[in-house]
Amino acid sequence: MNKTKKYQKEFISFQGELKSFIYRLVTHRQETEDIAQETYFKAFKNLDAFKENASFKTWTFTIAANLAKDNLRARQRWGEDWMELVKDAHVQDKQLLQKKFEVARTSEHGKFVIREHINYCFNCVSKTLLLTSQICLLLKEVYGFKVSEIMLITGLTEGKVKHTIADARKDMNRIFEKRCALINKKGICHQCTGLNNRFNPEQDTHIEANKIKMIKEARNKNYDQLLDLRLQLAKTIDPLDAEGRDLHNYLIENSPDWARAQVTK
Image 1 (tube, rainbow, N blue to C red):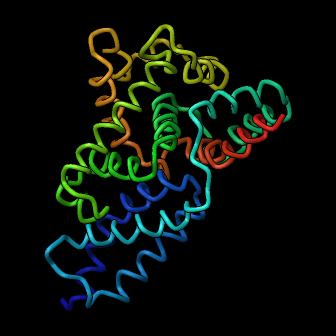
Image 2 (spheres, helix red, strand yellow; image 1 turned 60 degrees about the vertical axis):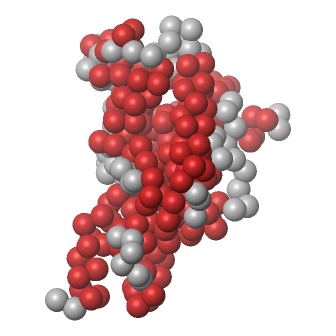
């Protein structure tokens, strides 16, 4: 097997992870496809420049991360209140609310699944982080890269990578503690259970929610341990290949516009 065929075979083996990683950064399905395709072309066009001091997967993720950074350079970082603003937009605009239910009803993959919505919420909250923090957190906690590999992908020192991940976890914990009613009775966001009641009225929301380890163990774990469980759940869900991917893609692609429109009112 020649070098190109060898690495084409390897690329196929992690292509799903790569696309999922890109999607969590850019939160746009078509842009994800475009960046994944450009990553492939760049990787194989420059294959002779690949030095095997790193894995081919690490090298490819480096290309993808840099392309995602270029894509996001001119975009506004998500505000911590954007999810609340999006909810307000749907409360105030009945046509907007109806459109959401229409997407769920008519899309091939529009089913509402609580565990997938928790993953969607994780994606939204991670978008409030600095981009480098989001990249480091995802690479380590969702995609299983070693710190040494993240150093190669990001160009950061070992200490900086570890510090960035620790700070990202603190920020995620702080936001989830304040927002998520699934782990804190005083949390302001009840969307997971509220939307399940609307989309799946015949389903017992409490029973369905308690099938999820993070929710079942919420009383017995601290917030850092609950974040670990949330990250474990995120590892098991490919946002591009989930039952409700059409619904959640519609929501996450449009959320920035909805939130900004609320701010300007």
